Length: 510
Image 1 (cartoon, one colour):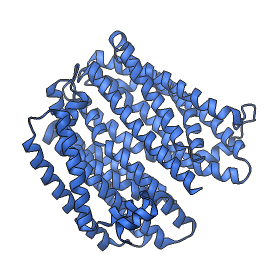
Image 2 (image 1 turned 45 degrees about the vertical axis):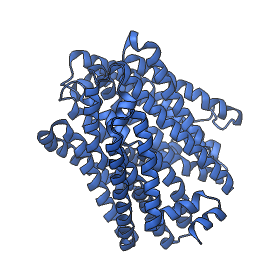
Image 3 (image 1 turned 180 degrees about the vertical axis):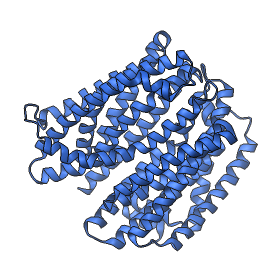
Image 4 (image 1 turned 120 degrees about the vertical axis):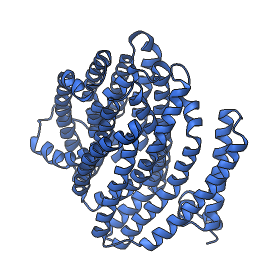
């Protein structure tokens, strides 16, 4: 069983890496065809609202349906429960899809009044096309959650790669003729293809009964659990919508800079967060199942330590290489050198949000394990209000660079408030050890940054890709050696988890 879970986790990690890389390729394609024009701004801004509903279904469904389906399987009613949730989600997704399509011509001008008439028209029709895909997204979300409950995590990632791949193909073949609509139509076709892919895998099992009578009580019980979890997931997307609304009041291209910078900066969080979640979550789950509160607290501490250990050097390294990375990924076609420099500047202000929101992922797992998710929802709601206020204040101080700065400050306050509340719920953590580990990680990070800055000054005139490779390799080696010398416990923990037992013991001298 453990070996199967380990293999499933590895496949999930590989699929996640491919998913995030495909997401970067999608952004590269958008940059190539539309650069930092009003067309790119309109598409990226239009995607925010439909994507809020998309995440509402996809991520919320995984958090809510996986445990409820597993429990229903133990009660010998798994097929019944899955069928009812599928039917209920189908109806709700149709309703949300129609509302989003019909109301688009009203709320797009309201949210983005500073867009030109041409930009608003693109945003409206793009939104309508994207909302038409919500019906298929809802059904996809139920099947993805089912796969996760069966420990087939990678299938969810593969289905999402299909959607992104279709979006990319839509742009490649039709961007010259129909502009940004090619991206939206590619996304719609991708959601249909993704649903067909999963349906082919599920159909032989005959798990979903379409002729079954609708049990509204069963659906209601599930959605009472689902809605608060899904709304919590949407908080981040609401904050992103706020960022885009403020960005739309500045010059053409600012919405594009904001979106590209945030996607790129948060790339390490998306990858390493999966690794850490894979390692830490079974630890927390086991402790909770055994009512071992001390072990649960230790799991939170390990998660916070490991997240900081991995993310800090990744963030520091990206700060040094950010102009090089953006030049490599985006600077071609309609995306100019000036757009590269501007996007890099915006990205610097976003780095705080990456670190703090990554730490918050661990804290959130603690709340959900303790069945206190509603508290996170309350704090998340406050963070939305705070984000609106700080965007207003900071944009008057720093212009559009105040938008990412507001995100970083909100992230700091969000994780700070959540962490303090978690401390009260678990009656304290070993803050002295946490602090000591964080100091060691910071020292190792400083040594790494000093080395790569020195190297960068020596090879600054070399080919860009060579600079990136040499600096990255040097940074990893320097940080690893520093961590060994400082005896950072997170490194030991990761070695124990990912090396064969005998090799790990030899490495750690245990």
